[in-house]
Length: 495
Image 1 (tube, rainbow, N blue to C red):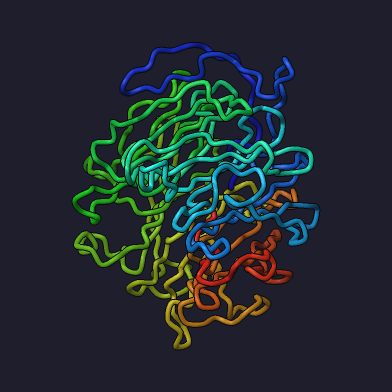
Image 2 (cartoon, one colour; image 1 turned 90 degrees about the horizontal axis):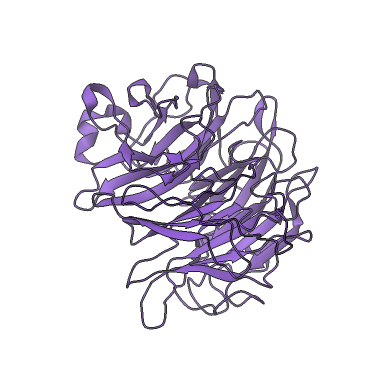
């Protein structure tokens, strides 16, 4: 989480025609609150109870619900003046009161989540993908559900389906993001369908789950969508969408593309190009934030998977790497990109095969200096004879962009961090940066899905003006949540 989308403007909605390259915005301004007036949208896109503190959703799509393997759930904890409180935990799955459908083996409820005020009532809502959901006789069609926020937080009552996949193995809901992609002041939702296409649902949404419009983007030229991120990468005040992609025929082929948000919706995709006009090397994960504090958000991409032929031309790919691409008024500029790995100056550790440096990247201001920083998961990191114990590295943002100076590393063997690093913990498989105590500094949340024989656990670190601190950090897992621990892999993903 970063500063993008902290305050959404209320705007008028115009009607535009749909073309193959442009998404149509909403048709008319529906009153999501049903009161006949325009309700104020939530100031924070992840504040479910409107108390001014960001809240956190932790999906566990591989978790059991009762005896149903990989049915999945989403746990929620609420922010406060002292940060996240375990005492506020909620757990939602498809057997929870009010949630549509029933929990079934393989539903993968929580495959991806996103947050935003979909109905314009002033409270953020939680959107949950279930990529393994069957639709009648259609296997793994996938689905998208919304749980509405309110003054008492999230409640299963009134939850509804937003969308269902059309075809077998569409796996709709594997990745979902929210943002105002047409600049009308209402939150929209973009969801990946069949790994190749995007379905865009335009807000505001009715409490029955109805959107003002739905458009499919299919002009992706056979690119498999690996991850999405939303933010303003050209500084025009309208949310843009970026993705990391690869070819269906060759995983070695990984690049960065983006769709510019306009009053007429998202434009056709463009590739981020580097030197000599070649497409810039991408990865498998990405996030967006203003690293150099110039008012335009930047792209950070993690390329954790190494060992492919392209590594011969990219030495920094060894052990994983991240790429920082600055945003400008003309969009992201690949020729100014900077690449880092664990052999880069100032970055802790040594680049080694299968470290998975960049497996998860998040962008937000950790130390409150006005520059967004980056957290990087390194779940394959081994040390002291331990294999895939895992670690997390933080890099600082500066006026010149991302830098290795002042980089720090954390693991379960760091003094003050609960637990002990062990083989296959995969600490750092997922990271999240979010300011849950409203002090202007994002806390670091880390997942270790391999902890306790793949039960998984989550760590929460506080932040200071000097950055992340192990002091006061805590961890939680199935025992705290009251869920089934067996192979839940809690902490495998946060988005």
